[in-house]
Length: 346
Ligand code: CU
Ligand code: CU
Image 1: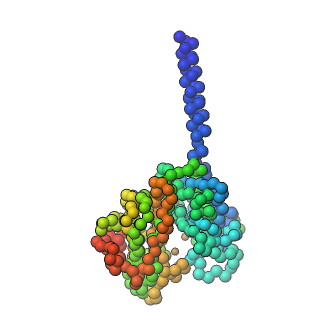
Image 2: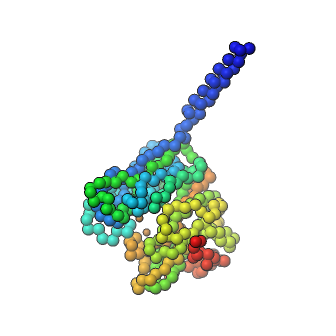
Image 3: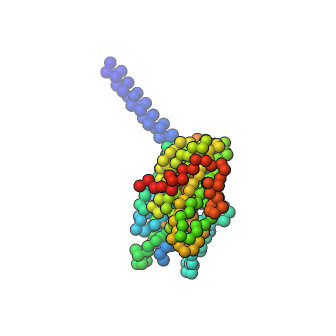
């Protein structure tokens, strides 16, 4: 009897060991943590934008499932992570200021984050001591082999440089959480934006809209807005059968990170997505859409995942903007929520 008991408990322990061992063997889906950091750069002047690349191993696919920032707002004003087909430069570090107007000291080569004409999308944004971003369970950005994302490029905006006056250097960056285990739910980003202009001394509505015609169900889960200094409110919408549903709305002068959406119901084939930036100009001149601080931008980024297959082929939804295009002029749009689209929640 005692012998039998011992036998049973021995067997069960053995069984537990086997199970534990087996489950460990099944952990190729374990999440790795890759430090993607600035290579100890010395920001030599204020308002500097520096970029650094990594080439992703093209023999394997990887899925990025989370972003853990390693920076403080004392050092970095913002960080953006770009997924690129090719990098903007061959250098280990280059000046990639989208807002750079005149840069006479060419310590670093000047180029955009991604190569001209190469696939380019923002997949993560950090500002003001934001916490880490974990994608929803089972969702990842596919990078590397058979993904248009062959490089990741990190841009860090160094606004203030007092702490570097003594010659010290910086390694701000992002720990990428990734897995080699194939994930079925791939993440993607759809960027809505406009061209156009803001007239002097006025409130202008910069608007865009597109119909999703790919045969895919997309699950939106986060959004980010971007304008320069004239932006007051940016809102994004899903329009179905004449009914407008708010996806997200935000003051663009608050930190421009990815935030959870108001509504995460799926977007289907035939739905329209739309965005508006309400801009206020007290300038005596016209402000055009453009890359520098003197110009404006109107952007709404929608981060989503698909249940299976690749994310949308459509990466952008850009329109002419004012004065050529307004929702009001668009015969496909009715019941425009004019007030709500320009109103802030707070
Ligand atoms: Cu910044
Ligand atoms: Cu901009």
